[in-house]
Length: 368
Image (cartoon, rainbow, N blue to C red; front, side):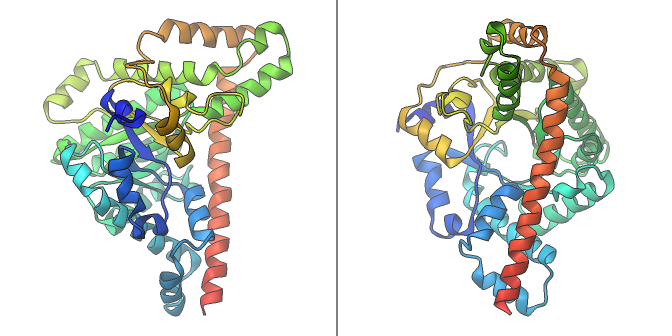
């Protein structure tokens, strides 16, 4: 099969679906994507679960059982989401085995309200890992300041982590440092380093959405000419950071002991601006060892008409630096934008989480 998605995978990009529901699992549709769409993993977040559980999507039987047992909404969410993730892990077990643990991964996120609470993030990461009880699960932890310390501790316990909500290059460097520190501790703790994997989820489209809004407000010819260029520049420079931070002597020593590089993952790759190509944040971000987690709509657009280059990241670093410099020159503060996007990202997931709690409470009440 030589679809654009198959080409993308052949060029080194792991395709992970950014969606999960029980209907998708039970119907066989999720498993079918492995062959038909070259999908090799799944990511979830509170927004995805709020949507799938809110619509029903095959949850009525378990909700009825949980209601009968007197479960709270939080307890029910824990049971429902970990079951979906465990079942998806089983579907991707073959991919996991064939890729030696790099793919076949299913991610589940700690509660977003814990984003600034290191101790409880660690505690819940351990609970989720134990409950799912599948080697190919990844626990999602946001890249907040409190999240950094949690990443190190969770990795040191031999648990694979998907670091989410990364917007700035500086924070990305801190995320890699947190991962490498965790790996060093895991080695000291006697864990098999070859079993520990991590991805760092660098968010793409939201950067353009926020910066383009500011460029339009500035309104000069120079500013408007920079529209829709910031996100790709930022993401490409993130890949350069990945290359640099895993080329050090300290890392080489850990790699020699069996440690895996933390792969960069491009998230939020659905295009928000209808004036842009619907495959932009996929086809323009192709390089080895990369992961791209796509909403289904984006994945289908790439399958239908994506034109896949061999590599659209390496070789673009100077151009990317020039774009960020030009943004600063017209008055767009990179630090301000990325700090805002991190705070907004946490807030949006908390809103989704609250919606999820409300919908599950309603479902439990209706099932009584």
